[in-house]
Length: 469
Image 1 (cartoon, helix red, strand yellow):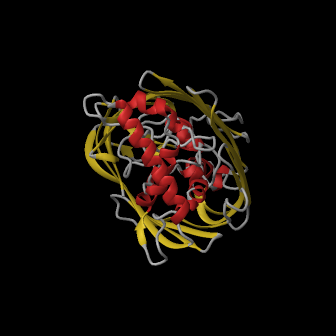
Image 2: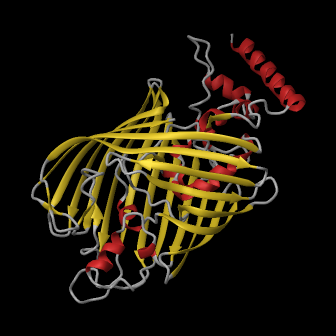
C-alpha cells in the first residue's frame, strides 16, 4: 500500500508541475473577481508549493496505516518557508486578540487569514502574498471576536476618570467586528482599508493605507496612510488579554509614511508621522525570523519610537501626561522581544521573553523623582494537533516597574471599563485554544490575574471565540 501511495503522489506532483508550467496559476482571478482573501491563499498555488516540498520520507512518516491518508499539515517542518524564513500558516494557530502570536509575530511570510495577520507586520505580510493575486482585483475578509466573561476582585478598582469600577460582574461582549478590503491597483500599487466596531456600536476606520512596490522588482517598498507602526511584537499575551508590555507600550494606528525592507528572514522599516500639528514623530523596527536547525527556529525584534505619547494604542502615556499637566513632554520607548520555537514530540514548544522601557524620565510614581518606566514578560506555549484539531496551551507572567501613575487596561470588561487609574504591577495568564469546525474558528478559555500598584487585584475568566472570514 505504501509503495502504491508513493507512486501516486509522485505522479500527482509531476502533473501539477506540468500544469503550472503550461498554464500558469489558475487560482489567480480575472479583473472582475471579488473574492475572499483566505480562499486565494488556500488555492492551488499554495497546494502546489506544498507538493513541491513533499519527499518520500514525508510520505512514510505521515501515512495513517488504517485509513491510507497522508497528513502533511501537522508536519513540524512546515513552519519553514519555502525559501528560508518562517510561515506558520500550516502550524496550529496561536493568537492573542485574534492576531498571530509567538513565532509567527516575527515573520511577514505567514499564509493566514487577513484578520489574523499581526498588526506589527501587516503591510509586510500583505505585499509578501502579492504573488497570489492578479494586478487588478478586489478581495475582502473579516474577523469577529466574542467573549463571554466573569470577573471578580478583592476590592473595587478606580477607573481612569475617577469612577469606581464594579468589584464583580459577568457579561458577553462583542469585542471585535472588523471588515477588511484589499485591492491591487496595477502591478505596483496595493490599497487596504477596514471598518471596525464592537459592542459599543461606534464604527471607526481602522487601517487605510497604500503600498507602493512589488517584491518581484525590489525588496524595498513604501506605505502611506493610516496603519499600525511596525515597531515590536510585544508578546506575552493569552487568547484575548495582551501581554503587560503591550498594555502600555504598543503603538496604535497613526497616519504615517514608511520606508520598508522585506526578505524571507528580515523585515525592517522607518516611519515618520505626527502626533499633532505641532510635533513630528518617527519610529523604526527590525524583525528576524528563521529556522536554525531542523527542530529549532527563532524570532527577534528591536524597536524604537521617538514619541510614544502621540502614537500609543492604549493612550496610557497620553492619560499620564494629561493628568499631570505635562502634555508638551515627549516620552519615547525602546523594546526588545525574542522567541525560540522547538519541535518537541508531536508539536511546537514556544519560549518567549521581552522588555520595554521609556527613553525619557518622568515622575511616573508621584514621589517627585523622575525615573524611567518599563516592563518585562516571559511566556511559554505548546501547540499540537490533538485528536484531529489544532490546540495550544499557554502561560505567561509579566511585571512593570516605576509605573504607578500610568493608566493601564484591565482584562475585565474589555469594551466598557477601559483603564485603571493605577498601573498594573504584575500579571499572570493561563490560556488554551482549540480549532473547531475548521481552522477559521478558534475557541479559547483564559484566566488572568492582575495586581495593581495600589494593592488592589482583579481576576478575569474569559472564553474567547474568534471567527475569521
